[in-house]
Image 1 (tube, rainbow, N blue to C red):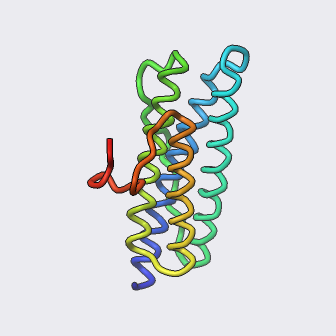
Image 2 (spheres, rainbow, N blue to C red; image 1 turned 60 degrees about the vertical axis):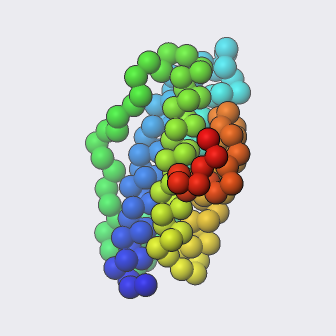
Length: 147
């Protein structure tokens, strides 16, 4: 693996985390703390995890001598987020996309980068269950999904 391909993989994960942070902030802001306190807690916890991963990836890119990819000014949100069911579905979709991204990173990295990517896939798979997903044999690998 070349240094450039390592940085490309880290940048791809960083771009995904920028999106996850933005979307989770929006989702958590729409969850009603009175009627859906558990959902709001779960969304806020997911936001915190993704923010931590985003920051760690940005540091890794800088440590590799590159400039971290910037976040987009905004990201597209699913429409009709006015219910707890819609917020949960959006969070599930986001975790599945995150697992797919990190599965891609696993295939393109080695050593500590791969270990962190495997941990992120596992974490996303567990969070999918929080958001009413179903367990999968190989999280993030769509062609093997048992959906």
